[in-house]
Image (cartoon, rainbow, N blue to C red; front, side):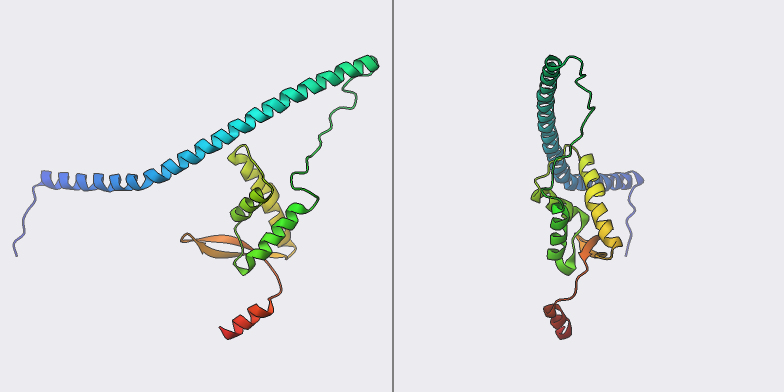
Length: 193
């Protein structure tokens, strides 16, 4: 068998072309993902702008109301300062009645059964169920960390839930599962299997 020697310049050109084609194919595969990400960012930006406009409108309305109360208080008794009581920071009932969010999360975990669910899945379900809108990804992260994950950790410390792992999209993810007594049907299935 005879071997053909390739000229160094041709060998270099072939190698460079192969590397460029590899990079081109990789970028062609990434382009749809980048387009999806860009569209998602555009949608988030639009929602943030709408939220900003709503906040600005509410702020203008509140500023007018405060000024009207200042004038009314001054007319009623000019010796009383309008800001005599300071500031009251009320908290709106975002999640309905007291305990509604925890009850929903527990019900969701129970419905997930032995498969469990990830923190992200739970956050998404809560957002949909309670119609929660966030102005930025940072607000979503704060909600996940300070509300959802805090409740999950509380239940974990008390022994009500446990963390498990399962494969999702080819990778292992952590899941939360409510510890519950096995049902008779599950025991029968285990014995039969």
